[in-house]
Image (cartoon, rainbow, N blue to C red; front, side, top):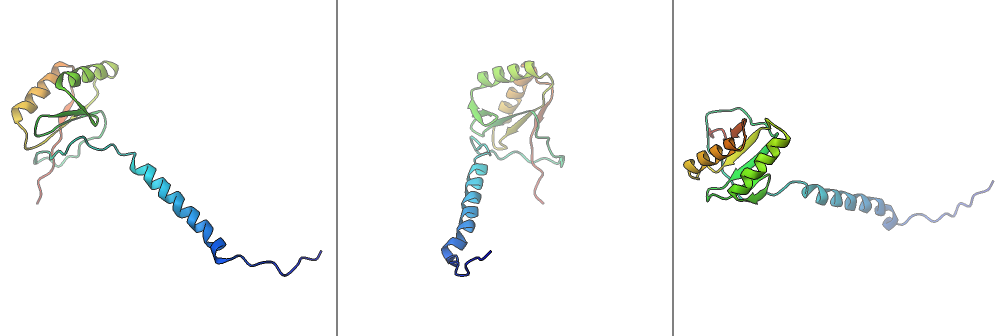
Length: 135
């Protein structure tokens, strides 16, 4: 069999096309992956403590801002709605751990009052999230 030798050589534009495709696929991947993280409803600076134990990331996370706003798993809620949601989730999964991330600049009596309400709703394993002091 005889093949013609005068095949046209691929231009530089055609040689770069696969690279362009890969770049756009990576761009789309990172745009989608960047949206997988839920944005925090408000900034929280937890109080410092001497404990260097890392908190587990399982269960519910409740956030309490310095001005008293509350959020459950990233959604802003009222105190009554929070208590009802926690009660419903604990009925579905008893003994589920609950993490409370309170702002260190907030009112400590409000934190204690919320912890008491959560305990009344059935929370048995409640953890107050703190950060290790900077050295």
